[in-house]
Length: 156
Length: 170
Image (cartoon, rainbow over all chains, first blue to last red):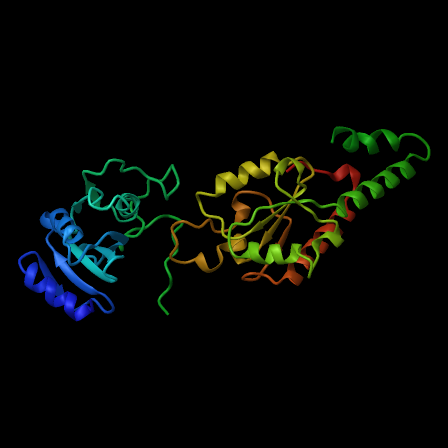
């Protein structure tokens, strides 16, 4: 299945749930509502034409006005890849856990919570594991983050 | 190290005792400088150069440097690679577990001042001299094996200049 076929398939079958976005450069990018995330992911995994069975990566983005979480998923049987993005408010961002759909999402979600402060609802073990144990300086990947020994790259 | 430290105090009181002190000093310094066993502590790409130096082409063994996997058997710790804030307490523990006299070589830009992670980094310790005292700094990113050999020879020269009475516990 090529990207064009995948795009037309998703646009005919998931028109109400997924909106296409042009920002996806190599893989197709679709935007989904935070409320529908888990149900859409389940449908994508169980759809016999798609079979998205592999969770590649989860990324957070801080645009200073909003947070975005990008889920990169792939199908090992159909040889296709897809990005789905959730847009979250900058105040108290929270997103549902997809580890019921793909258990591999567990650690990625912990990492995103640890570095971006995006809370994960219904996560079974939301504890710190990348930063050191005494960390109390906030979420370091946020744009507005600062610390006493943090040296910003000077404007050249 | 108590006996070694107090040897000059007692031996120099007797006639000709200075000869004993100097001879013991020379033998000890020679033995320790030529058998610097280093702790295998590679945390990043500098460790690749350290491995290369240890292998047959550059042959660390000819300086008497043999790697040890346990800090209890090591005289020297070559901090090869980025030290993150999470790694810093572990490095301190390893250093504390080594027996006196112990030496530290800071290999590469990351261990000297954070290296390429000096700016915009929340996780990297900017210089291991915040954690442990360093004897020799080797700049480079990563340093060539020749630089590492030069650094180790510099440390050996430092050891051979040591006086018995001056040994300090760091």
